[in-house]
Length: 65
Image 1: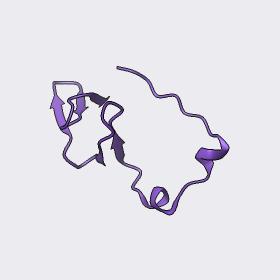
Image 2 (image 1 turned 45 degrees about the vertical axis):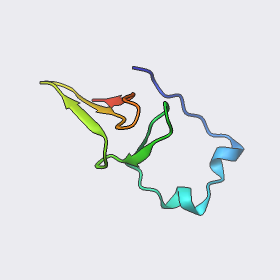
Image 3 (image 1 turned 180 degrees about the horizontal axis):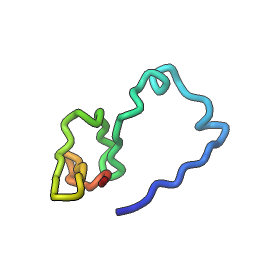
Image 4 (image 1 turned 90 degrees about the vertical axis):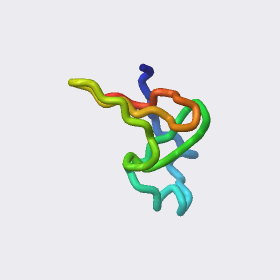
């Protein structure tokens, strides 16, 4: 699993109306660019302690918790 580094730059601080209207719970696949709400089409793999969200298009693991 990879971590995500975030930092603010002038370009990222200026958001478009579309970006401002997106829900905060949208996941983005770094492998293919797919995006959907956390309750969208993501494949969720569960075991006794962890849920892993997997891209339905390219099968990249997005997040685990």
